[in-house]
Amino acid sequence: MGLWIYLDGRFVNEKQAKISVFDHGLLYGDGVFEGLRTYGGKVFRLKEHIERLFRSARAIMLEIPVSMEEMANIIIKTLKKNNLKDAYVRVVITRGIGDLGLDPRKCPKPTIFVIASKIKLYPQEYYEKGLSVVTIATRRNLTESINPAIKSLNYLNNILAKIEATNSGAMEGLFLNNEGYVAECTGENIFITVGNNLLTPPIFAGALDGITRDAVIQLGKEMGLNVEEKLLTRYDLYNADECFLSGTAAEIVPVTLIDGRKIGSGKIGNLTKKIREKFHQLTHTDGIPI
Ligand SMILES: Cc1ncc(COP(=O)(O)O)c(C=O)c1O
Image (cartoon, rainbow, N blue to C red; front, side, top):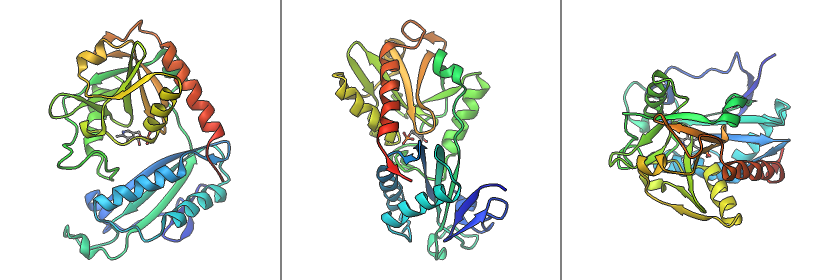
């Protein structure tokens, strides 16, 4: 039967869900997207994801042709149509169909599609044993060129990093910015703990303003930790007590090896475990019902 995809105002079966070869999302990666999760029939941080989508669109001067409320309804309707309670939702807005030139003014109507599907997580063993991460040579996009805060369809920077990580036999790649400070991973934000301190790079270091990151910062504060957004070097990571990544798809995933160095004891740390538990509680108590 396949999934029902929302595409420009109607639901089409996944086999029929097609977009034009002249769509600038495809030709130039010109567009923005979001990835959301639902837990037990509730959408986690729906408003925050929609707000970030609109901020990304504003940054590339793309006017989303529906309101924030309408976008929320489209997401909920797509979940209902597919009868999904625990799902991953991808929302994509492209510049739309234009000619072969770059000029976005030639694209009169943005394309909108929403895919709601079953979620695929990292294999369970990574949550139990932790991930290995390597620093990759490709630097994070400069904030003054393609700002990583924009969740754009141009993810080539991240894909190159993923290829490098895979080629090195690691599960994830660590991005440094052009000054050598830690930015983030290919699809997750990064945190370390040192004693009672929970530290993460600031957004200006070249990271996405992660919604899971935000939840972790809030949880850390509630747990009485000293939470700081701080410029970090690889030295700080190597000498941390604990390290973990945060993201919508991965949730909270421990990191136990960076560039061949064991982090802390080399096993999942207690604070990481606690934050993971608290995050799970939050995802099951917070959220907008489908
Ligand atoms: C590059 C990058 N960083 C961080 C994140 C984590 O952000 P969030 O927690 O909002 O999913 C993502 C995932 O969307 C991402 O693609």
